[in-house]
Length: 150
Length: 159
Image (cartoon, rainbow over all chains, first blue to last red; front, side, top):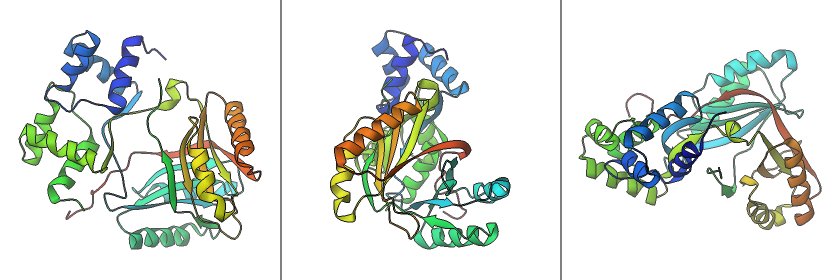
């Protein structure tokens, strides 16, 4: 993993406070004492290498009117690929992981309304045939942090 | 709720900022605003909390945060707010939520812990247990990633 100190300083800046000015890359460049072209080149390079997954807005899904939940299923090991294919096919399923528990498959689902969400969950129950599924919507948010110290 | 214009802006911003000298000018043109109007609209959406963060989303595994654990805690309902706030106060905790109890699922507080190694996560969990007195908890490590993607909002037709 080859991030030099300039890359790291760029990441620190653009992780949270991406400049909202006409020429944001120029502002970043000025604060680091390098050229605008150099900043563009480095950010592009880090995007290509997958270090930067996305440059843009991260949204509060609730404020966009979306509703979400976390679901856990007990899926027999031999059935994992089939069930994952069905679940992952929904665009509102953004994360799906196997975890070390009897409830072994965990996915998050976002939908534009409560009704739509429940409709999708019922569909998943029906099409996967997995009856042991718990739906765990957040009832209290104590912390959601998206930034990391570099 | 969002205006039709704001929905258009969301669609553009989730597609990503272009790597050009004046990225806002390019997006402004696509949504029918001036550059200055677009910048002000984005600032307003940040102020209203619609945009939670404006900038780069990073792939954390590449930056040394190799281990994370979802730790679930069986917390008596009347202690949930207090315990949630205590756990949220720790630097190693990136997310802390309360979720409902289910017949075969007693855990109600969910935390995501980060560390360099799994042992770091186990140590942090033990520390949180000692600080809160909550002894029934489980560390759920992901053993395989089946899907990880960014949500695309307002993609259905007719919006």
